[in-house]
Image 1 (cartoon, helix red, strand yellow):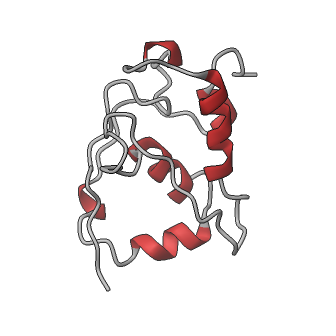
Image 2 (spheres, rainbow, N blue to C red):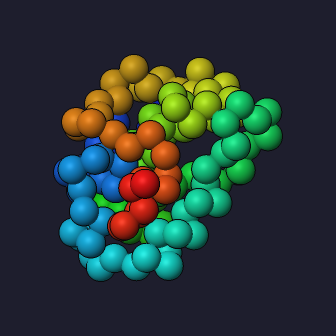
Length: 115
């Protein structure tokens, strides 16, 4: 069964962008909530995914959309094999656009943890 991403363009304040200061993310920033998003990161190369996705901060609860930065990280450097298989049936995956240099690890998206 095919499906479509709700969002194909990365937000201006996406935490996966190297240029984004997480404290500038709109609608308030919580380091605790940001840290809890680690549960959306699959072990690279594992055949077992997390079953969770990082939602874009621009979409309200109930209208969630995948975070484009997270999606492309997990498809690429994150090597999330179950997600790679899932996007094979995505009708608009080829339309995804990133905006500038991206972090390679989730840890780098959090404040003061770029080492």
